[in-house]
View 1 (cartoon, rainbow, N blue to C red):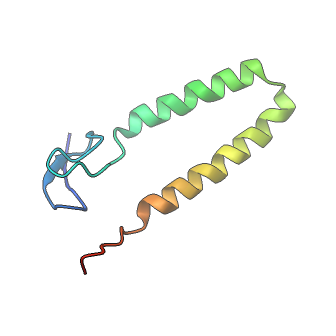
View 2 (cartoon, helix red, strand yellow):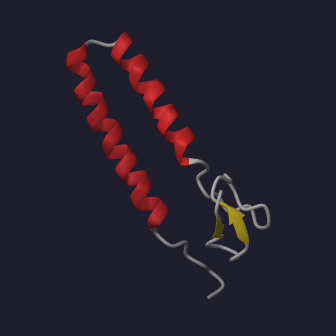
Length: 81
């Protein structure tokens, strides 16, 4: 476990925390839990869907994942400045 700085209030927060306990800023949670969640979803997609469709679904998920990562990296606009 490592401590990181909250981008919003600069408080020390665990890198496994889903949100800052001081200001409530969403940090994203544990990377391991995200990987496990994606693996479970992909497993069920492989079982339930035709294998020809799975490449299309993985591509769509990749696009949405890329958008989420891009949006996460953008700084928040602060209306008080």
